[in-house]
Length: 526
Image 1 (cartoon, helix red, strand yellow):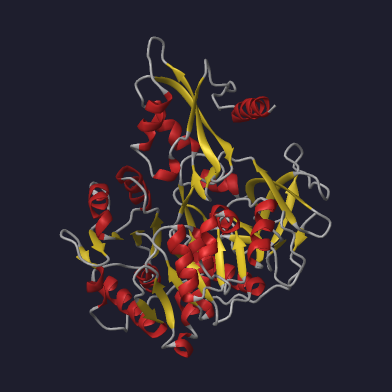
Image 2: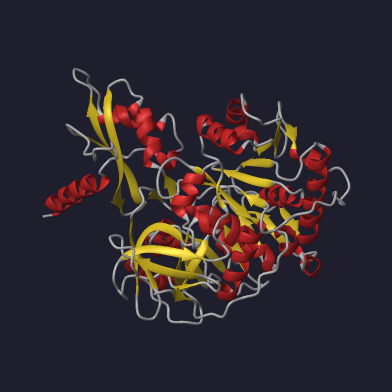
C-alpha cells in the first residue's frame, strides 16, 4: 500500500530558493542570523541579505553565468551561507565539498561537476590549489586572505543590485552535493530550487521552527542535512544559527550554554555524548529543549538515556541526499516512537516493497523503502543509467534501505540493500576504498563492508586477498588508505582471506562477508 502523511499537503511556491528564504528578512533586519561560535563574530539578517546580493553582482562581473557551478570547500563559518546563497542569486549551482577531502578526492568532484570557481579557507588553500590543476576552475577564492588566492570579500565590493537572472525553479539547479546513492562512486545529485523549497515547506509543517529559536550549526553545511535543515531552514524561519567549524564536545557544550541554544539537529554520536559523557554535567544546557537526530539510525536506549538525563524532546527523522533530504520525521504533535523515523512529510508518499516480488509488503513486513514527492532529485549529473536505476518511470525513488511500516504509518528503517557505509552519519563508498586498496602492490583482491560500531554506527572493514609470495600487514593496508582519503573514510579493520566471494559476473557477494562477520562476532560474544 501507499503510505501518506497524517499532515495535510502544503502549498509550495514556485520561486527561487533565495527569494523564498529572505522574503521576510526585513522583519529581522538587526537580528543575528549567523554567529561564528569560536569568535562570536555576528552577521545580521540585513548584512546577510546585502552580502548575498553583492556576491551575486561580483560573480556576474567575473563572468559567472546561469548554470555555472561554484565549489565550496570550507568548514562551517557564517560566510558559507553568503557564498551559497550568492551563487543561487547569480543563477548558479553550488557543489559543496567535504572540507576533509584530499586533493585527489576534491579534484574528482571538481572535474565531474565542471566547477568554474572555488572558495576555501586559508588552511585548505594548498590542497585546493593542487586539486584545481587540470580542471575547469578559473579562479580560487579564499575566506579571509591568503597568498595565491582572491579574497572572497572582493566579490562584495560592488552594488547590491545584481543582474536579473531568469530562474526556472522546477528545472534549474541550486545545489550539487555528491552521494554514492545505492552503489558505486560518488555522483552529483542534481537538486533544483523547487526541490529545496519543497523540502523547506514540508519540513516546516512538522518542525514549526519559530524566529525565537537558536540553533547550533554543527552538522556540516556541505552535507545535505546541515545545508537544508539547519542553514536554510533556520534562516527561512528568522532564527539564529551558531556555527561550529568542527565538532569538539567541550566547545559544543560551551556554545550551547553561552548562546542558550534551544534546538539542535544532530547525529547519533553527538546524542550519545549528550546521553553518556561526564563532561556534560559541567555545563548548563537547560535551554536546549528539542533535538532531532538523523543521518544514521539512533538506538532507542541511547535516545531514552538522553531524554532521561536532559528532559528534552528527542525524535528521529530520515531522508537521503537524493530527497533534499527529509522524507520522514516524528512530529512534535504526535506520539513519538523512538525506534521509528516517524511519518512521511506532507506531499510525500512511500511504500514498502518486497525485494523478491516487487509487490507491496504488508504492515510490519520488511521491504525496500520507495519514496515519491516534490523533494526527489532531478537526477544524477552525467549519469542517466544511475538515475534510472534509482528512480523508476512512475517517479518512485528506490532508496536501497530496508524498512517496515506499522499500522499507524510509522516507518522503521532496519537495514540497507545498498552498499553505502555510514560512519558517524557520513557516507563512505566501498567501491572507492576497494579501488585504493587494489592499487597496493601486495593486494590481489579486496572487498569492503560495513561492520557495527557503538560510537560510529558503522566502520569500514576490508577483506584482503594477498598476491602469491607477497607480504603485507593489516596496519600497512590501513595506512595506505588513510594517506589517500578523508579521516571518516579510513579502513578501521582488515582481515586476510583466501578469496573474495563473487557471482559469475564479478559482483562481490557482500552479504556473504557480512554473514561471516556476524558469525564471528556471535562466536566471540559467546
